[in-house]
Length: 248
Image 1: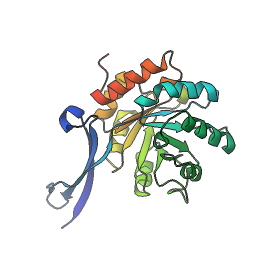
Image 2 (image 1 turned 30 degrees about the vertical axis):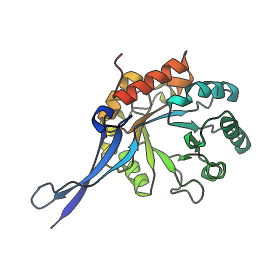
Image 3 (image 1 turned 90 degrees about the horizontal axis):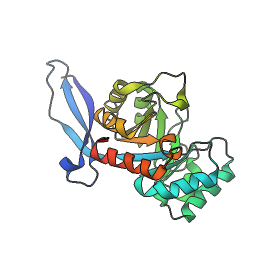
Image 4 (image 1 turned 30 degrees about the horizontal axis):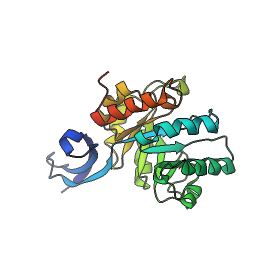
């Protein structure tokens, strides 16, 4: 008998799951390639709560970024320190300032430096698509940015705990590059067993579309850090995520 595993992912809303936030589920169906009949669903398990990620812009002074993050961090699940132009000493100093300001270490994700993330006891490390994975040393928890379904499958098979997939919608930070779109997001989410986070042009109004197409959360950069009122904006994202979308 020829059996083919098919990974299926979906989001269970809070009102249906009996939890405060809802959660992301994955399951494996087995397709009998000879008869075309679906077998019993196996290995259904909770993977992660739907999550809200905010990412530093790379252009703001540390003081500005820190002050905004102090306002918004109660509403987010993860804060990504993504400063490609900074030397490692400045990145470490920034992480220590965040910790000194009372932000939980588990919420801080350090980009491209898993060994430093581990040494500081942070929540994990995030790697670019072209990075060698899994990281040779450092944080036990790591995620990766991907821009194709094939890459998503490769990183997931290498052990990624989550994936950023994008950019989903048109965004000023990716001018001239075609967006991946909701169809590719859905295909990526249904092809792997780790949570897929939608990134790129995400607004509160578009959040429901991302969840409906398999995303286990959203990631935002300028939508929060360059907003006129970051606190009101992050509250809108948070409400949209945990209600399955914005009512605006």
